[in-house]
Every structure is written in structure tokens, then in C-alpha cells.
Length: 292
Image (cartoon, rainbow, N blue to C red; front, side, top):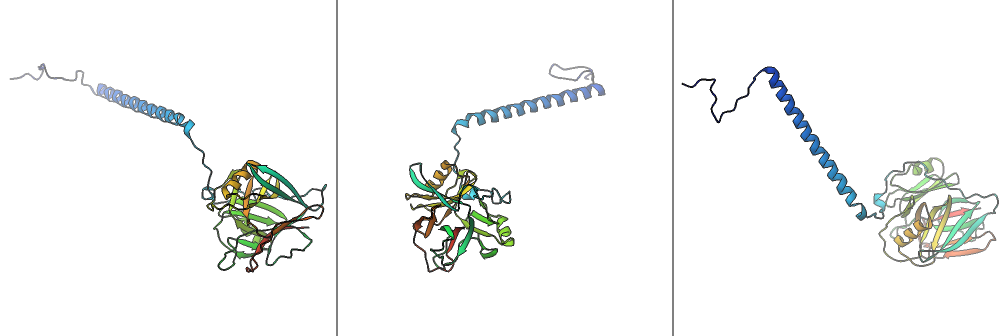
């Protein structure tokens, strides 16, 4: 008969089988597990850091599309523009330049008031020193595309184009957003508001789908002034947007381009036509104008 105290050659027993020593064994195993887990965590972090630093040279910054722009205008006004200069008269200063090989003209209205106009415009009104078609109109029914406010009265609603211009109390804000509180503010305060294709948002050129080449126009914020940039060469929309970015434009939206009706009057009263096509069939033909 086997003695319980006898130990076979292939048998293992724990010697010193007290409660305190069992607790110490458990504690030692817990600390061992903690050490192993910590080691694994350090290894994972090191691997992630190594992979991230290794791909830094291959990252590509893509030009954002309008759909990638924030859908809400964080600041109510962004930057309000008002071209006033006590040392100058009333009119428009034109500057011709070449950027990215594209010939263009920069029109800066001085000491005049921006507003929107809807209907058949008087091309001999001496009070208007600049005029350009603003929002697009549909060719099927002639109605305005996108949200539009005229003297506080909403004439159209819609978010098909994310670029916007708001004019309130003679000041202008240009931006890119789905939902801008400036639409409501223009309605409440008797202002103006319209939408167009976005060109530049916070100094970054934006992509648009149309791929035809044409004479382009854009309403821009440049060095704290509101300016209209017109291409003298036919270019793609995306080429024009990139050119505006390289010019240093902060925010910009397109205006109706091509040969659409428009004109500019300089400080000496000399009138220059931007285009003569008026699309008279639409009762909702609309213009951005600057008035003495």
C-alpha cells in the first residue's frame, strides 16, 4: 500500500502549501500578466509610429471638391468687404495681369454700393459703374438657380450650388457652405443673397464638374477688397480656380461668364463692355451691380 507522503519520480507537488504562499503565487502571476500586456502595447505603439513616419514622403494632398467643404458657415459673416477709400472717387479700377499663363483683368469697385438687380437692366444708367450677371437661370423655365434674396424678399430657394454672396447694409460676404445664416439675415434686414459655383474657399481652389473652356468671371475677396476677376482667355473652371488661388484670393464664387452682358465704368467715366448677350427671354435675369 502506497504511503501518501511518498513522491514518485514523475510526480510534482507544491511544497509549503500555506494560504499566504498561495496568495503570493497568484500575485506574482498577475504581475507577470501585466508585464506581458504592457510589452505588447509598447510594441504595437512602436509599430504604428514607424508605419506613419515611413509613409510621410508619399502622402498626396488633393484639391478638395465642393462636397468636401464644411456644410455650415461657422462664423456668421466670415469677412465683410467694403471697398471705401476717401482718397479716390467713385468708379472701378481695372488692373490687367497674367497668372499661370492666363491673361485676366481685375476690376475693383471703389466707393460704390453693391446690390442685386432682377429684370431688364438699363444699360445707359449712369449710376451703375459695374454690372455682371450673377446667378444662373434655368433654360427650360427661366427661373433662378439656387437661393436668391432681393431687397429682403426671397425669390428662389435651393442648395444646388454651395458658393454664396451676401450683401447686407452695403457690406459683402463671399463664402462656401451648404447652410449659411446669411440667407436669413439678408431676408430679415432687407439685404441681398445669391448662390453660384464655388471657386476658392479660404485660399484653397475647388473642383467643379463642367469641363468646357470659356471666358470665366469670379467674384472674389482679395487683400480685403471685393473684386471681379475676368479671364481674357478661354479656360476650364478648375484652371481658373487654381489661377485665383495662385493670385492670392481668399474666397471666390463664379459669375455667369462667356459673353454674358456686363460692363465696367472707370474713374474717368469710360465704359468697357464685358459682354452683350442679355438672355432677354427670362424675367428672372439677374445682375450683380455696383451703384454710385
